[in-house]
Length: 507
Image (cartoon, rainbow, N blue to C red; front, side):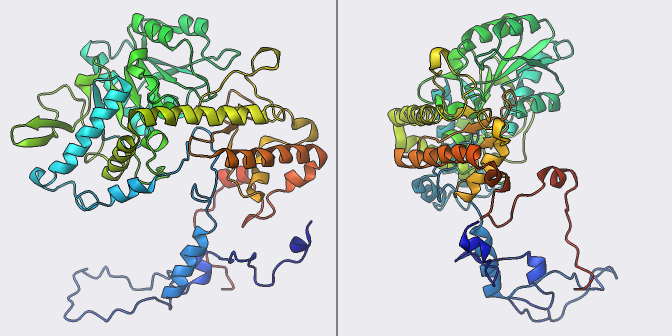
């Protein structure tokens, strides 16, 4: 242990990183940052149901409030601090140009209940975004209202369900085939839409086993949900054959477009036979990652599914653009959400598209793939790449590189230990234990926004940690040492979470 760690600070602070407890521990019900006078002439209309005892909520003065939240923010890792290697999540730089556009007057202060005549510019922006999403994907229709990737999946699967109902096959086609390399939301979405899920195994090279897929086709198959590029970071070479097979069996092809950032400007999913695909605007078009907040997952639809797209629809009329918000007179299956989508994400995504242009978006995909393959080449001599090619070569990956912990297990070190050790080196960990088809998976996605210098720094840390794992496994098993909290019992925390703070008896 270093000298600095053997003499813990007297204040609880770590250098310039200030210690900060829970607001319940530091605040007091008698403290406040603002004093409000008692209301005059107030008439109680609660009928005797008013609170008789104080809430006992913690209060802070104004400077304490500011410090509390600033100190908490300093404990966060962010893309503005450093490389964010989460595979399958695509944490990349959000250009400040996009942020400025999203704050323009007329976009930032919109209300969904404004008169249509007052929001013509916003509708034009949404219409143009829809145009370019259709142009880039080669699809004739798009629903903008889905709020996230999984919501977009649900949108597409409900369109498939509506199309089957229109064919009189809603009760006979109940199975949805989902490859083992798909995103986990795919089977969950299919079940939520009322289908039965059947898994399709993968081949030895990390792609769909074509013969196993053929064997599972039948007259009861409603759809296939395929992630492409898949969660092993590989492009499905047989995707056109797969599309033809599922169409030949009378089913639909849903493509999970979460990894569209690897092929944007290079491949049009519509040309591959895709019937529905959601697009995570944060992953491909740089809008901020939702994280439980305002996201967007527009869903593009083929000609076979376009009539069933959910309302609202933007329609051009003589008086301007209007929103068709009722499904009467259309084949729309209904609404996905109360309003029309996330305007802040629409403005950011369109700004990104227009600032890059067609050649720039193509370069986004090319650079994302180049960066991932650079990581694969640098790290493969030190960590096992489970889908390596013959004679020591490796298959080129797409936007993310996949490794496992097999080179560490002899020392008793696992993926979780390496991930925790990365925290001490100032990095957010890579995606751990996903995809599930690889034991001890370590999924790393650098994105196109990282320069070679940053990739080299990360690789050097990973290589050094791999060497330390074999020389001093106890060091990794003890990590993290420098994080605000030490290693937690995550299994116990997940099974028996403490969801409510209780005041200690002696407080």
